Structure formats: structure tokens, C-alpha cells
Image 1 (cartoon, rainbow, N blue to C red):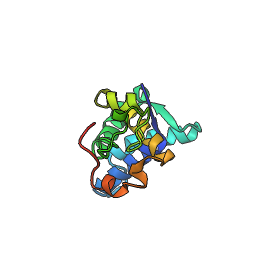
Image 2 (image 1 turned 90 degrees about the vertical axis):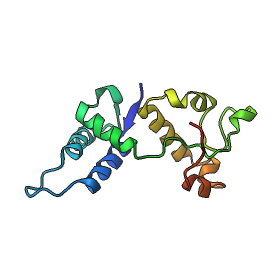
Image 3 (image 1 turned 30 degrees about the horizontal axis):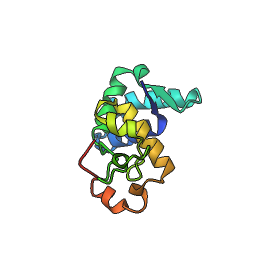
Image 4 (image 1 turned 180 degrees about the vertical axis):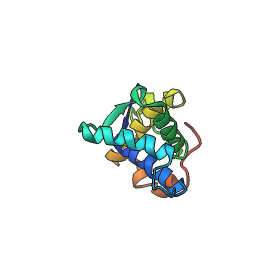
Length: 140
């Protein structure tokens, strides 16, 4: 199992804040509140990740709804793992990640996305950034 990074929880909170109808008593909508509680506990304990199995049910459901709104795959339809590279120069995923993508959990996919985004060396982040912005490639 993978961990969910606090930056993804924050992105999910913002996703739900944009979709929430303001309440007269200024309380948070249930999905936002569930995620905010997890975020607050991580901050309080000085942690940056929570194991996806430890996420409370309501927070996990809200996080998964946000996840479903994000691009599924970093693929830009230029795969160098098919040419024998251990890491795809197009998207930055390892050969194993490319092969197992459809079987990975949402948290595992986000961990991969986080790693390749922080590295920023794959072609999707420079040479072919415009292709990535249009939605990437066809595979998973």
C-alpha cells in the first residue's frame, strides 16, 4: 500500500471548497471537513503522509472523488520503455509502473505522479509539455 501526501490532501480540500455551497453558519461541507481533519492531524504530528489504509472512510471517499478529477496517466504517447529504457523518457515512469499502471491503487498512482513531477526531467515537463497539456497519451 502507498501513502497519500499532504499536498494531495490539500489539493482535494481546495477541489471540494470550490464545489461547496456556502453554509450560513460557516461550517465546512462534509467532504471538506473530513479532509481538513486529516490535514490538521498530519500538520499537528509533523507528518507529510498518511497510509491510505489509515484514512477515515469519509476522507478517503472525498480524496478519491478529487483523484477521479485528475489525469489518469502521465503518458504522453512517447514510451521509451518499449525501446528498453528502465525509465520512460516521455513520462518519467519506471518500466514496472508503466506495465502495472492499471493495477496500481489511486495512492500508488499519485505517489508516482508526485515523484515524476518533483523530478521534472521527463519530456512531458519540457520538450512535449504542450502534448501533456492536451491530455497525454492513450495508454495507462
